[in-house]
Image (cartoon, rainbow, N blue to C red):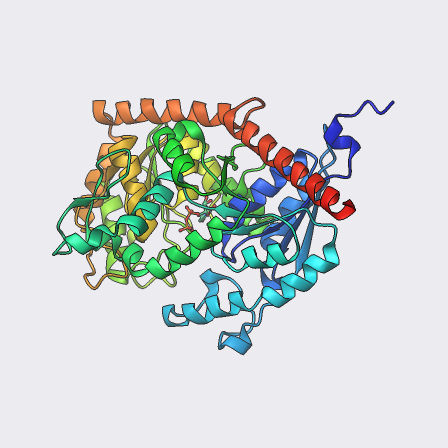
Length: 491
Ligand code: UDP
């Protein structure tokens, strides 16, 4: 008799994962694929040649893990990306590599043209049981249907934003407001959170895209979200009601792994930078350092970068800052000498998840990118928010008004696509840093709350936790779909 669990006795499920071509979308989908592989699913990730190095190290590591309880089976397949045909530089295959904002539409048009290549690949990879693709690849819903397989949407941001965008699409609250700064709330949400047009102009401008996303969601098998129930319970319940399809909350996916996403880069330089940064932190007191980073896509003007530098200096507290900026022209003269010993400016790719998890780090000044939010929450650090783009403004509301684990750096922000460009003065940042790592009851309470959430996040991904169980439901659901497909073929 075969003593293996039922799912092991059958052919393993084969799921194809197709992430959007930018690092912050690839990281959580790769981690989700790895979790599925560790649960016995055969996984194929699909990307383009210039992005392969971002996925391959994790795949190799997963495949070389001991077979306990399953030998992970992850594979990477490449499809060509027609950059030059779409007016992009040769090899420009990642949103972060697009040389100018005006070329972004070319990048998206090239992305839509990948349908034919993915179609051929899906035929080649048969049998395939499901296609998981980034929400942005709306066209994969029809493609999966042609292949007779379920398509799952992968959402890289949380339930709060998904609910806000859903209700914005349905209620169009902008129709009743007259000025950019007039506060309004969005009907239908669990909390009366206030927004302004200045911060939400991207959501309003992209109603067409929201419509496409909705339609593709209606026709998909389900939605995978990198969040966990206990982080946003009211919004999970709300989303269960409004989402037309099954919802699987599988996050925080970065926590479920033994390898933090920041350990992707094996190059000597990156390893040396990682070691030096962590050693630097080792010499600092608990919760004394603020980490400042704004993800992979945010750009700041030279004027703003200079204010940032001066603000960190004026705060008087230890900091690790990842400016991710070209050149050094913006750096105030003699800056690094002046802050030496107290401030560390990291150039290139920082090991963010590890930095945040270091006991010396007590605060995180961040742009509210969802991966960073989850990493900050899981590390149990207090947050200061500096949103830059649409859904980041929404996430700020979740962190500040609903969860009360963050404090805004500045109240006068507007979305970067809006006409009004605000330069946040150095003093605002200095004040925010002092609030975060300077002690006091306000920050102690924030830290208590965020540490409770961190513990709940760990529980969620542990065996028997809500996210672990949602991954089980996903696997079982797709097994059932396969059985039904087989039955209908036989019948
Ligand atoms: N990240 C990192 N090192 C860096 C910059 C970014 O590890 O120097 C990682 C960060 O930990 C997070 C992701 O890149 O996992 C950024 O994603 P997020 O959603 O926060 O922001 P986005 O890049 O989409 O704006």
